[in-house]
Every structure is written in structure tokens, then in C-alpha cells.
Amino acid sequence: MEITVGIDVSKAVLDVHVHPAGASFALRNDEAGVADLVRRLGPLVGLVCIGIEASGRYERLAVAELASAGLPVVVLNPAQVRHYAQAIGQRAKTDRIDARLIALFVEAVRPEPRPMPDASTAELEALMTRRRQIVTMLVAERMRRQQAAPGLVRTSIARVVTTLEADLKALDAHIDKTVRGTPVWRDKEDLLASVPGIGKTIARTLLAELPELGRLSPKQIAALAGLAPYTRQSGTWRGRSCIGGGRPAVRAALFMGALVAARHNPTLKAFRDRLVQNGKPKLVAIVATARKLLTILNAIIRDNKPWQTA
Image (tube, rainbow, N blue to C red; front, side, top):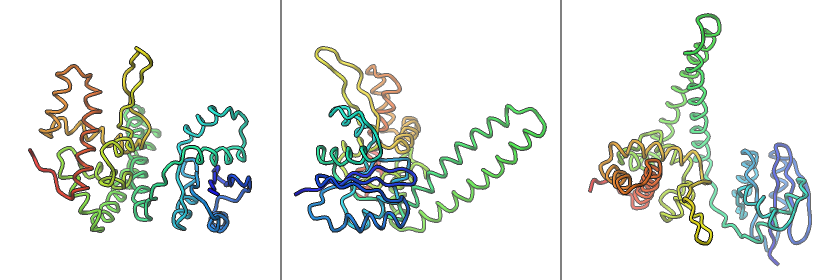
């Protein structure tokens, strides 16, 4: 008998449902509760998948410990589970019901568990996330400083800006030491940065947020980054293809890389210009350039060969 498990995550509690046994229980979302979860699920014979909804990072402790224990865990897109609930007519919603729904969704869809990032990659991801947060705050505070009248308010804002700039400088130094001090990351960063348009920040974002780079097909890596277009049509009606989903930080980094590459990378500049000359909107051309850039980077890491100008 195959067993699937659904886990609904909140800040304080993990609601768990084991299907088809119908067993449900709740545990605290802390180290002791997660350790108990591993002890309960580890011995299950026939366990094929454990589904956990992405929940604002509250799921990370459970996912990390389950993966470390060798259990088949997969993080799910809440929108997919919600659409599944609508499809089967499930309107009632409680944490316990949601856990059962996740278990049913996993049984029906059979999402493929992916390897979880190791501890060092997870730490680099946290560092890059914090860097983005500080940069966002800096942009906002600098804008407020420009708009503030001379006086106490402007002085207060200037003090915050100085603090944030110091934090950013220290964080960048720590990230640089971490990446350059790790041979595998250093080599990958050098490979990525060999492509015109890819700087340190973009390369390190990809190292942290897209560890699958070089191990998936072009279509798979594009889908993971949210750069794979999906078609919208019905009968004779054809809508515009769109992109979406995936990992927003990766997509944003590649978009910025494409903007730079479209000016300074001869190969990608020619690609982007050709699309525009053929009538593609400029934004569509840049998105396509970002997708092509990702395909190039994926091949570079896969083949372990730096960029070579054609």
C-alpha cells in the first residue's frame, strides 16, 4: 500500500495527515516537534511522498529535517493545491482539512521530490536574501532623504542610510569571503561571470537560488526560473504567451543580466536586435534574451567551460 502525507504549516503548528490510513495529528513547528515528526514518519512502510505547502519560510525547518532523514519530501505551490481543492469541490477550509487535501493532491499529482539545498547553499541563499532586503531599504530611505526638508527628519533618515550602507558593505565582504573561500562556488562564479552581462551579484544569486543550474534540460531550467512561456488559446482564439511562477529572485536577476547583455554581449545583442526587427515588443525580446542567457549559463555549468565569443 502506497502512503502519502500532507503537512499544513503555520508559524507555530504542523498539521499532519497520513493517507489512506486517515491518521491526523498536530505537532509544534519547532525543533522538538519536527524531530517527533521524523520519528513518526520514518518507519512508515510504503511512504512515497510527503507534501508541504510553501508557507512564507515557516516550512523550512521541517523540510530540511525530513530531507536530511532521507524521506521523500516536496515543497508545493499553494496555488496548485488550491486549484485542486476547487476541482474536487472542497470548499471547507481548516488546517486539518488542508493537511488531508495536500495528501490527496500528492497522491493524485505525484510531484517529483527534488534534492533540498545543503546547509551551505541555504546559508548563502539567506545571505543573498538579506542583501536584497538591505538594498530595497536603502533605495527607499535615500528617496525619503531627497524628499525630506532640512531638520530632524532628514538627519534621522541620513543616520539610517549610513547604518544600512555599513551593513551592506559588511554583508558583501562576508558573502565575498564565503564564495571565494569555497572552491566549488569560486569556480562556478568564475564560469558564470565569464559571460558578458553577468556580474558578481547575479552570479551569486544564481548560486544561491538556483543550485539545479547545469543539471536540468533547457526547458526544465527555464520553467524553474519562471521564464518558460505558456500558451493561451481556445478554439480559434489565441492569446499572448506569458511567463510566470518559478523563482522571482532568479527571474529578476536574469532580467537585469539580459538588459546588460543586450548592450554589451555581442551574441545576445544580435539575438535581441533580431527579435525587435522581426516585430517583437522590446519587453518580449528582453524576456527571450533572459531565457537564452539562462540556457547559455546552464550549458556553461554543465560542460564546465567558460564563455567563448563565437
